[in-house]
Amino acid sequence: MRVVKIGAIVAAIVVAGLAAAAVAVYSSADTSTVGKLGFEHELAIPPLLEARTDGDGRKVFDLALQEGNVELIPGKQTRTWGANGPHLAPTLRASRGDRVMPRVRNRLGEATTTIHWHGMHLPAVADGGPHQPIRPGETWTPEWTVDQPAATLWYHPHPHPDTEDQVYRGLVGMFILDDPEADALALPDDYGVDDIPLLIQDKKFEDDGSLDFSKGLVSPTGLLGDEILLNGTHDPHLSVRHERVRLRLVNASGARVYNIGFADERPFELVATDGGLLPAPHKTRRIQLSPGERAEIVARFEPGEEVVLRSFEPDLGTNFFDGRFSGADDTFDLLEVRAARRLAAAPAVPRRLAAPEPAPPGPRGRVRRFELSGQGSINAQSLDMERIDEVVRAGTTETWEATNVSGQPHVFHPHDVRFRVLEYGGERPPPHLRGPKDTVYLRPHETVRLAIRFGDLTDPEHPYMFHCHVLQHEDRGMMGQFTVVE
Ligand code: C2O
Ligand code: CU
Ligand code: CU
Image (cartoon, rainbow, N blue to C red; front, side):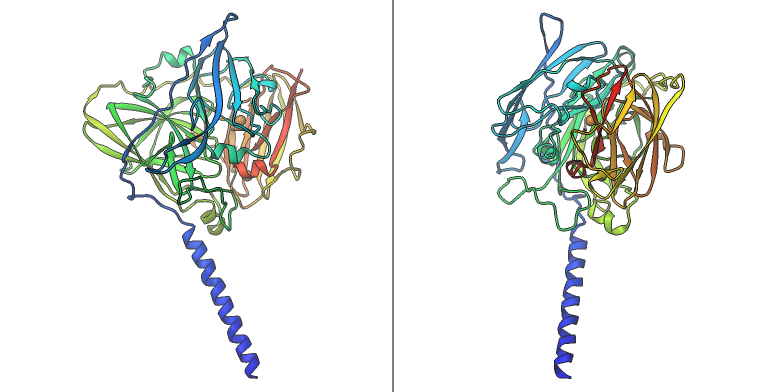
């Protein structure tokens, strides 16, 4: 009797202990920096990399990939990766019609990497996915002609299965594309002055300042940092001298979704998404960005004011458990904008931005379906670099349907193309998903339908990738390959 009783009591204590531990894990998984920052450091602006023009008229961008130390947290050194510097990579810029040739030298020491031009329409051999490794000491010189509208693209490593790790180390940069129509618009366009790049990455630090690579006990999406760096700056502020400022937001994080707005709830104008300008600006108070997504917003400031750019709780569509461990309850102060006492006047955002891309002509190509499940597969298969999953005919328009058949967040991204969202969760897409896109968040148990126009760069041998841009999922094989053929 007695023994049984003690057994029951011990069991009860163990259960209570486990429950308490679970509650502790659950509640400590909620992260917030709101109201806790001093905005001590001036926001760094990634330098614009001057291209040199070679004898064949190509714009050559010299990038040396390297490891280094940088003071991210005051008084501490962090080992990071960068291009042409210890952390992050310079901004590249080119115009429609330019022939570009990055010269990418791997000086990382031991590591093999790749550099992928996210959002760029280019030949598959120039894409920089896992099929174009750059081994230690090697130089990779892809080339292509820019043939797409003005947009904020970005570049990052893509070696399989090390993308999450290498992106986290900070080897990411922006690639801004211009075109004459966009140049003619009265939008803020003075780089680093009233046109501000913002590469957003979350980090976790060990006490000694080194990067913490641990994933946490329960983690449906991978590493979630509790410190948000903008352009590598911790606790940043930005001083502005113009009444209107464009912010180019790039979510360069591995798993975290940001829901960005201003602390005082002022509206701003969304002018561009991943693939370029919207037909007309969309006035809103929030823009949610999942890993890989970009947005350009124009915000207005009053002389002498200070206002905080914040990431509010993202709407992930997950249940409360998966949500908590995917960052759905997390909030962050990102940046304090400090407006000068006198601000240069700026014209209102034009009511018309880009001519809407013409409805794709001709017959609709195939409908293809992609089911993203668990953490490592699409259509029940994980990546096989030797297997071509889809073969697409050049110049056709297809409908790709991506369904999240799990309870976890996923993010669908095909290389080489821009797409239009036809339907999001069975409905007309919300305004911020009506512009040109190349990356889209998939809510659990929902389908997005995308119209994708494939270009005319064909190569039956070399594939492009499509994958989940939650980088841990990608690294686990939630990735497939397609070729574009005649
Ligand atoms: Cu940011 Cu495969 O891409
Ligand atoms: Cu990409
Ligand atoms: Cu995923």
